[in-house]
Length: 186
Image (cartoon, rainbow, N blue to C red; front, top):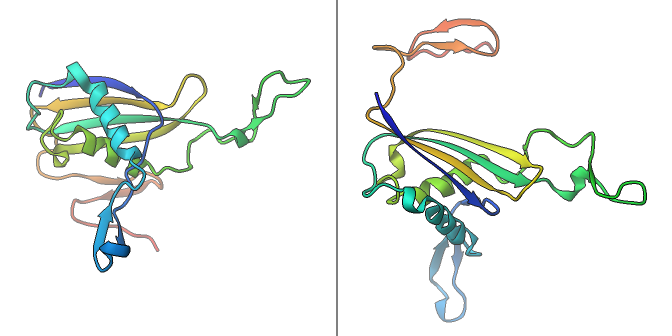
């Protein structure tokens, strides 16, 4: 099985793709319903930035086969994570109780959704071709926020085993569970 890889970076604040919102029109539009995904226009700009970053790296025609994505979203820590500068501290210092993991908004899946949609018809035909996404959020300590991405195009989707997948209790040492079965300890 062979793979082709495209790696790219997108500077700027990652923007999540929110859920569609419906609202009723007012004035001359009264009685009409409207649907929007992007009331502020920021998601359109972010998607454009992603497409621009792929630029000359994109294939001549969008890929029709399976795609695997690795997405790392670099986010700026909030000011509350730092002790402010003062006479004894010439620059803000990271608090000892500041979280190491980026577990605040925006939601990782909504950040991923924006990238998946941006790359449709650019490097692949449809985001349904993406069989695996590894998405993570990290705090950026130096430099600016952004996205680092790798897209791997496979000849075929990797399989686990010839006919079945063995699921293991990864967290509790539970015995293997056969494919198609679910084991619950309640």
